[in-house]
Image 1 (spheres, rainbow, N blue to C red):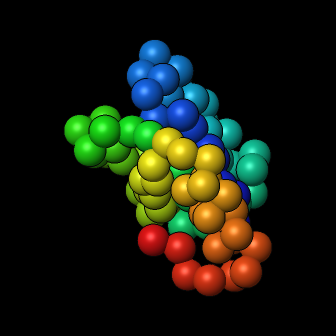
Image 2 (cartoon, rainbow, N blue to C red; image 1 turned 135 degrees about the vertical axis):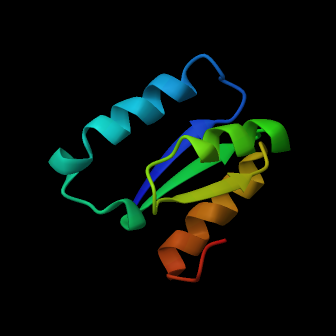
Length: 84
């Protein structure tokens, strides 16, 4: 599983980065279902807009902007617990 982490409020960077990852999906040799796009601190409107642009089958995750939430997300990855 690949986890792409984005600062959710960097609106001018996120769409080009999503397009970039969509363009290299074949080179990554990882199915979209095995990719999670994690947006830290995005508003609900931003999250919906970003999620609509993702490769079909990939996972969109929204977490708060605090370090605690980011570390909590990373700990869930490390422990193998199901991620939202």
